[in-house]
Every structure is written in structure tokens, then in C-alpha cells.
Amino acid sequence: MSTQVVLITGALTGIGRAAAVAFAKKGAKVVVAGRRDEAGKALVNELRSFGSEAEFINADVRKEDDIRALVDKTVARFGRLDVAVNNAGTEGQVGPITDQTAESYAATFDTNVLGVILSMKHEVRVMQGQAAAASSISRRPTGMRVRRGHLSMSAASTPSKASPSRWRSRSPSRESV
Image (cartoon, rainbow, N blue to C red):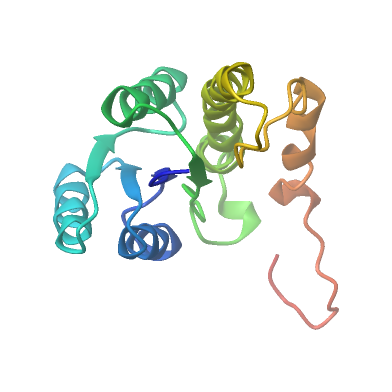
């Protein structure tokens, strides 16, 4: 396969940023996504300094239209999508559970769980199409490992089981949950 096309959500800081830099240094074409234009443009300039083709697309993983557009713009720009790093996440409002609101919990859940599900929905849509096209052209392996029907809606319940209401401390000495 030629140079890989990589899409990274939550790419502007931390692990997402480090992943973007690592892929760029290996020569991948990198699309970074986040909600802060200035930081996104600065990161793209850094990635291009490594010789990588890179683009920033402003997207909020909590909004399906943003994710659909993000994936479609990635494919429009680079012709395909080979790797997706669904890294967008938030700690939410830090503090005791008694100070949390339904709204702050929902915003955290929507970013950390719904955002991954929506991202995968649209990434897999594209990757399945690429796999089907590749298999009709050649019987040689393409390196792509996407199976039709592998992710079902019942799979969406699994990440929701990790919601904070189900977290338990395994250590009796822990004072905060």
C-alpha cells in the first residue's frame, strides 16, 4: 500500500497530538480534527514541517453532521481513509459526584462514548466501501481488516457500561469516586 491516510480526532493536545506527530514523521497523510481552529492550524504547520501532507478540519465528535463531513472531507482530500484514531475525550467537570449535573455528565458521555460510536459509524462506512472495491479489483490482501456487520448496534451498549455511574473503586482506601 502507498502512503497511509490517517484521521485523528482529539488531535490538538496530548495523546492525539503525539499520534499525529508520530504518523507525520513516518510519512503518513494526516487529517487532524478538533474544535480550536488556531491550535489546529498550528499543528498542521508542524506536521507539514516533517514533510507530511496534513489538513485540519474543525469538528465536534458529539455532532453526527460534523463527523460525517469530517470523514467525507478526508476522503475528498486524500482519496481514502486507512487509519482512524478516535481520541477525542474529556474528563468532564472534575469534582465530587454530588456536585455533578445531568448536563455535565451528558456532555462527557456524548464526547467519550457517543463521539466514538459516531466516528466509527462513518469511518467504517468508508472503509467497508474501500475493502469491497479492493476485493473486486484484486484477490491479493489489501491490508484492510474491515468485516461487514462486525459492529452492530448492540456493540454500542458496551462502552456505555463504562459510564461513571458504574465505576467502582477496587481500593477501600480511595476516598473519592
